[in-house]
Image (tube, rainbow, N blue to C red; front, side, top):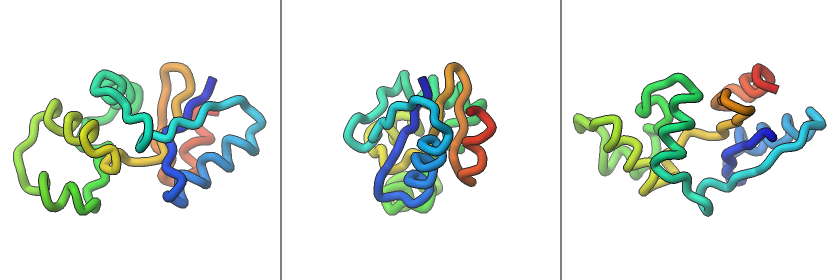
Length: 113
């Protein structure tokens, strides 16, 4: 089943949910601000996305700018920051089996349906 890591306050995330609804496929919404992914889940998502952890960070978030920007961080430290502050996780993330995409732009989601 498809999964979408979703933040209802984000317009791109809401568009991602709409696209999944329109696809007619079953999917699960994971509100990652309430059900924070474990560090292991984040590592798995990063692996499925085939990116570096820093590429999953929302670098314009106040938390990032005030606490992490400009620092030399290991991948583990970046993952820990996202786990501690889930607002830092880029959204939406859609997972289909062992594949995942970041839904920015929203059209990216179509590539794994």
